[in-house]
Length: 351
Image (cartoon, rainbow, N blue to C red):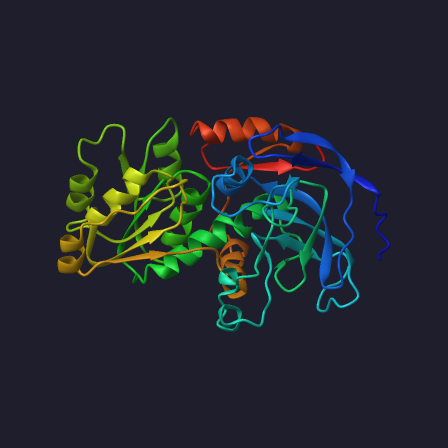
């Protein structure tokens, strides 16, 4: 398939049942199908979705056993016979959406992530927590040569996701956007995309080092939910009427409910985070009188990915990452469960 010496086996992080041990072990290197790339993964971001997949939180079954991960950045070392527009040595990214049918209504409209037959990296398709990963050549992200693969990895999910969410909020330059869960892996990128798009950024979060990170990334107003006596009143006061848009990347049901109250009249609440079993509760009278919108935003399509990567390539967004070895993934999950992560962990697949 290529001049690259592809081994028979590789290191990977695998689990065999939900909540079971995440094993760092030797497994076979996959063979790409006719439409797939084989990518030598160098780095992979760790997303909260990976934790949900391992725990089995969602009403969509994962494949078992499973190699998680869907923010993989690496080098194309092989490909199937039907692949076009790629060559060996290209930089490629593995996204949450690994592949889709490309012929249903959703796919025709550019909403491939809503395809009923969507194949999901690190969920229904073995993902990027391994040294060699397969990805549909149509959906794999093209990464410019010379890009820092560790830095770009979180853009492939976290970056694309928050960029699409900000577009879904239908804001204009100068509008206030509130980011609930502002200093985690998603929020830290949302701050930067929002600033680059010309919005005023209010962040809501709590924990050591989070306000400092928020300021470093260019946020304007920070509200610590641990010390605020009334989040709704605080947001409305500082924005002089409420946020024009809210990006909910936290995994708190209470925080989501509060966002429907502090959003400004005619504003938009965007739901992104997926806490297990949560409901979005909105007072109907309040929502009707204020004419607010509540919308869900999943992952971006290929165009959103290209645009999000362009912001990164131009130096307008930067992933605040912490590097660790793939073998340390269980410890990262433990910190994630405890809410101890500031920014984004990225695993080096060679360790």
